[in-house]
Length: 148
Image 1 (cartoon, rainbow, N blue to C red):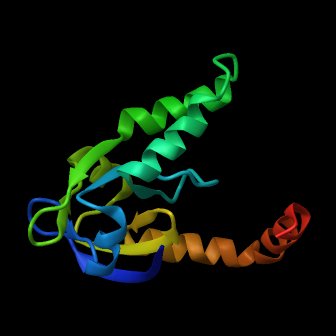
Image 2 (image 1 turned 90 degrees about the horizontal axis):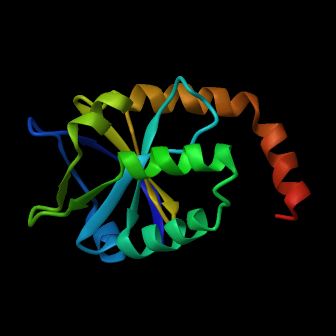
Image 3 (image 1 turned 60 degrees about the vertical axis):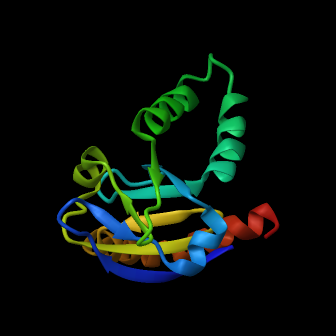
């Protein structure tokens, strides 16, 4: 299980360190793609093990081709996805396109969210957290409605 939060710097090539305790869970490769958030202003990346990506991908493949909203998200996730191998120093190279999309230039915050890693620009994460705090009661009500 991927839990916790870590702050790391990207090196000059755009590589970021993956914590050792997460590497046991994710294996040798992390599939990195755009994050699914309800906001267009704050962006993050999702990283999943190959096995988790395959499970997630299977769920996406069940969307009917006539579900144009679902297909648009599927298209975006697959077009942005990259298989990032973890090197001997425990780093992955985040492709330039994904770094630019999320504003990852120097610092990164990595968050373990159970089955995936989220990779954030720290300023974007702070802004997103502030927005989420405003809607926290609604989020709790939503979980209650789902029976969680």
